[in-house]
Image 1 (cartoon, rainbow, N blue to C red):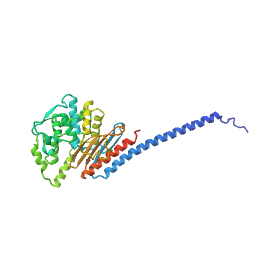
Image 2 (image 1 turned 90 degrees about the horizontal axis):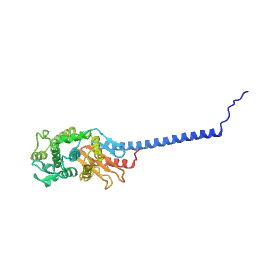
Image 3 (image 1 turned 180 degrees about the vertical axis):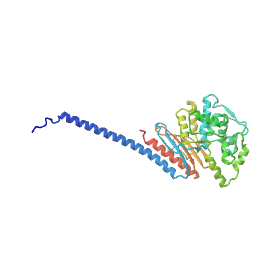
Image 4 (image 1 turned 30 degrees about the vertical axis):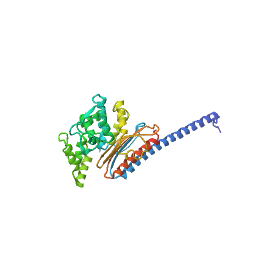
Length: 351
């Protein structure tokens, strides 16, 4: 019988074969490790999203939320493209517009603005109503500080007037490329509509005395519910969570204003005195938060930037709520969502 002439493999060939098998195994092992790490990060991200959804599911009302880690760009969100009434968070776009006019040399931060007859609506409260009268003069910077730190509505309306009206503020948002934010009215105008004077406008102004009477008027529960529904459904002076988050991102990245005015705005927002139980409510003590709140009836908002410890970066947080729950429950919803985002972006590394 004729036998095959094939010789057995050499020791070198066997070694090469074993090395190739070992290398292939290591590549497979490393690939699995990388895949498992990516899956773990995704699982954690999904876990944060599930936690936000769980919080919203136990809350009686509608929640809009967006958080962005400015270092990595990672984002979590609820109803990001739904328009919500801004209430006093509209004061952030107003501030950006006014400071934009400062950048353009059209206004000066130290410029005194004389208060006119009709500028102060006593029923809207705030330092202007408490301490000043027509004929007084207040600087642009002081008006900005009162508007953003204690939410002075009269200061806001003076700044809107000085800045060319609500339409000019809205145009500034378009110029910056911010989608999802609408600025349409003075504060006295918006609140007059909320209180039932649906005809109020710059063409049909409401005097301070008439506004005070409107504010004091008694309304039945049915009428109050009707006006609340109208306010919630009005597209004017609304923002999506994504729109407000994009504005804060532009501010913090120095793309909305020049360096000096950016720092002015950041410093004033860090000094905000309202809504201490909202974004800041469950954060570690002394966590830096630059923010602005908004409150009108069932609307409870807080928007701003949390600075993470140890140089870990900044997180934009936008929370818009519509709910008939108690003030404590609404504040707690915002605080819990903000703390969940804080923990995630601090402790879960970006890929």
